[in-house]
Image (cartoon, rainbow, N blue to C red; front, side, top):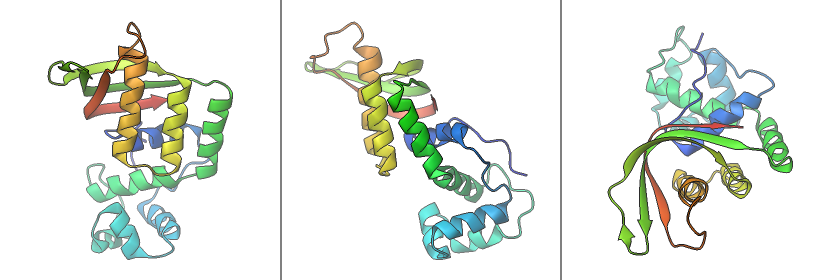
Length: 194
């Protein structure tokens, strides 16, 4: 049996997907064989395409058919888990996002990452490690959800989250029209709550 689902991540994409897992109405497949079967159905039965998407060798996917106790540290198992979480119950995910947006829902983000801060006059110092928990504002929640629905790149999601952090944290005591920007560098830990 696989270990309990981790809710934090090191990428914005994965953190959003893991937050969506709280809204599932059914659990995803648990055994390595059942997970592989689900992912192969999503890939149209093309094992080579699945291996390419997961960025693992095809022979490593074959080994999933015989694994009894998957190791949490195995990169193939981690790739499979990330893809299961990304693909499981897409309608439930969209419905949860729509409900949150229509009810002026809140999104909390908790993270530990290196943040840089630049202004028109130049950069402050090198990025600093910060551990913050913030409530995000509605327009940014919508931007994050819309970008995730169209499978935006991690770079684009980080830019949206950086803009969000700038608006929700750094600009609380500054005029909104200033040319300051926040850059989100290395993410050590990231978790969304909604």
